[in-house]
Length: 309
Image (tube, rainbow, N blue to C red; front, side, top):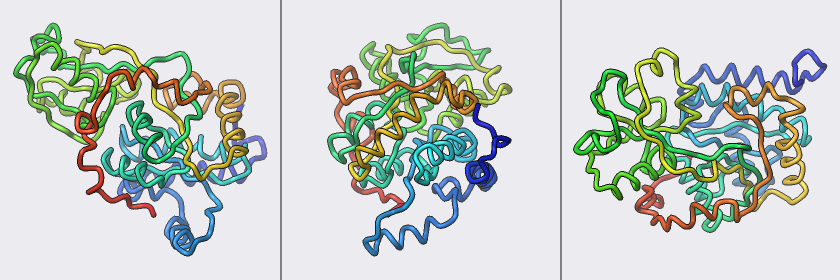
């Protein structure tokens, strides 16, 4: 069991730091959850190799919530690999996509369509994905809504995190359009914002995924019910950039695959039971959808800047 009471002062210090900075929501929204990032960026510009690995997490939820969940895992990977791993995120999904485009993250947790695109465009290589779980999108409405099925949403205003959120936006939109259901999309930046918008009556329905719906606040979740679930796909990828060596990839993979037995407490806040090894072919089910970049909100990606050099 991974514990701060077992003589791991460096790792425990990193965990405390990540959790402390999570409270600074403004800084965390830019991924600035550890000190020295600005100095490291200057070193990168000067041509020096980074001595830490950047772990980029897709911003499905608030930066503070992501830091609380993923910061301890970053510290654990630091201990297991002997190389510092720094948690980072961005203010929204389009900015995260721009950072994937630039290869700004050494390790990234990205949605299935992101992996299909950025494995080809930016050279990210599959490492692992959540075990024993497929990714399904879902549609929620208020408990007191008269909507009984997806067909009742024709002509509705529907909240989505962003155009490129695979399970919560891309797949539900595609399946609704295939059924001839018309709707007006409203993009609200995060999964949590979708659930709050629907609960507040600001949208007739909203797209999400099981993991984030189960982890949203009880007071919001109790006001909602699921009326539709999409087909199932290979879940989010953990992938590494071209800059990560094969030896480091092996160390990272070993740490992830043994997490369920070595430090299961770190998986609970992630809403996962473990990780399994993945290859590029693991996401062929997503490739068969034949999605175009504009269908996933990527048509303007080259106009967006990543805040990390």
